[in-house]
Image (tube, rainbow, N blue to C red; front, side, top):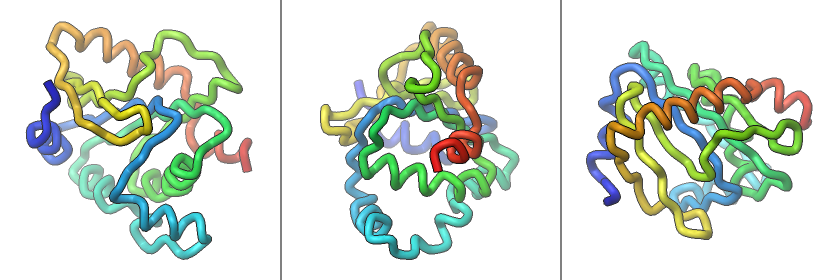
Length: 169
């Protein structure tokens, strides 16, 4: 069962930590279409790119926001756009790591995205085959250990975004 409002509220109500594993090769996000077009045209992306306001609103409260993104080359336009926005997230104190299977093979990760809030609530993310978000599925408490393990594997094998960016620019 996919949860909507309950899942959405977690972004404001988590107490300590919010972690995300991003695993898809393609994402299709309607809300980002205009901004992607500006990015691809080389236009100024505005102040939100310099210091992500949502991330900043969480980290200013002492909360930790982190993600690991497993990438596959070649990067489609959406992922190039998303990676270009990461420096503003990092400036707002989000921790971002990259796993590039072309550089390092990592086993022990799921083939899907998930979010882990406060080490006690996990949601599996569901998407259409084209990468359009359908919703988050709350997983039962007996799956927490498994997903904490996935998070730990991802964090252990990820390189900091800045290191990845230096090697690929």
